Amino acid sequence: MATAYQNLSEYDFDSVPDASGMRIGIVVAEWNKEITEKLLEGACNTLERHGAKTENILVTRVPGSFELTFGAKQLAESRELDAVIILGCVIRGDTPHFDYVCSGVTQGITELNLMYDIPFIFGLLTNDTMQQSIDRAGGIHGNKGDEAAITAIKMIDFSCKLKN
Ligand code: DLZ
Image: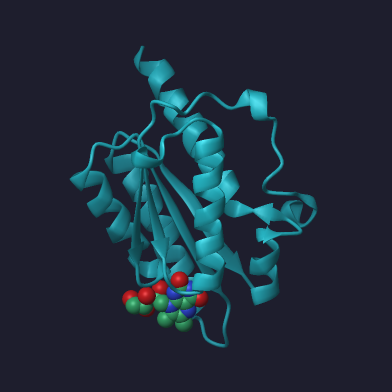
C-alpha cells in the first residue's frame, strides 16, 4: 500500500500558500482521544507554521467519528469559515461496525463538499490496529493532522484563485 512507505508530514514547505488570512474550522472526534488529540495538535501546529492566526482556528469536538459529519455541517453554518478539517480515528474491531462508520463518514464528507462552497477535508484514520494509528498520529508515518492542514490551505487557495 502506498501509505506504508509515506510520511504524512513530509512536504515541500515553500509549495504551501500563506495561510495568514484564512479562517479554518476543525471538528475532532473524542473516540480514541489519545490519537485524535495528536491529530489536532499536528493540524493546529501546521496551520500556524504557515501563518494562520490562533484566533482564526476554531476547534470543536464531537463524541465519535460518526458524529463528525453533523459537527462539521453545524460548524460551517455557524461561522464564516474558509474550510473545515475533519479529524477522527476508527479502529477495526470484531464486528462490521468499522465499515459502517467509515463509509458513513466518507459519504457524509463527500456530501458536505458538494453542498457547501468551502472544502471539507478528510482527516480520518481508518486502521486495522491501534499501532497503525499511533504510527500516523505523530509516529513513524508522520501525522495525518499535518497532511489535513496542508490540504486545507491548498484547497482554500485553489478556491480563491478560481474566484479571482
Ligand atoms: C461505537 C464506536 C466504535 C465501536 N468504534 C469507534 C471508533 O473506533 N472510532 C470512533 O471515532 N468512534 C467509534 N465508535 C463511536 C461511533 O462513531 C459513534 O459515536 C456512536 O456509534 C454513536 O453514534
